[in-house]
Length: 108
Length: 126
Image: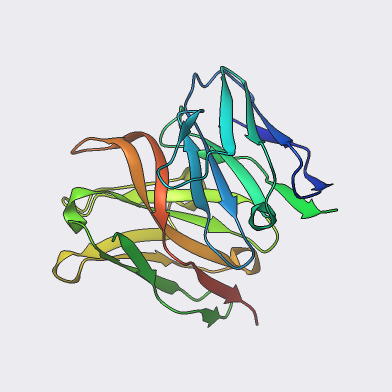
């Protein structure tokens, strides 16, 4: 199975900051990558698919980039509601879809 | 709007089975596969398998083969995931999720997930 590694595992930031989360695949996955946001006690929410396509209704401060093995999720200006855990998911290798271990974004 | 509503929390003893339901609304149930993903406490997400509600065809992750059974009842737009021979490390929140991307009449391919059900906590404890 393709292994997805996110970095960092957790970090602190302040509202208004620009933050970047990285996701690395153990082998090339083209642009078959999605990003999700999960808040405590809630289901994951889709943010981005195809590495850089913003899901309808998701604020434009979220953006994604990358292809092959290295991907990033950027939040341009952190809002209070953005503090959550973020997961990447590869869907290149089917049906064995795999997720990163998550990046927890906390308030500084 | 598209909505997936799951059954309530369960507590089971080791060796028992659990059956979680996922009721779909807001779209044609037989038009989309249904996937199941689980999340152990404080851990990441783990894909378990899918069911094609139209045909009943299934595909399970190798890790769960022999223990998981996915079924559906099209008359009530509901998918089910049953996990047997439960162990303590099966304690997790189980989610159903509708795939986006490309699924044919026989399989899903490059898919991501949206929306998700609210999750069902299954606790396995003696």
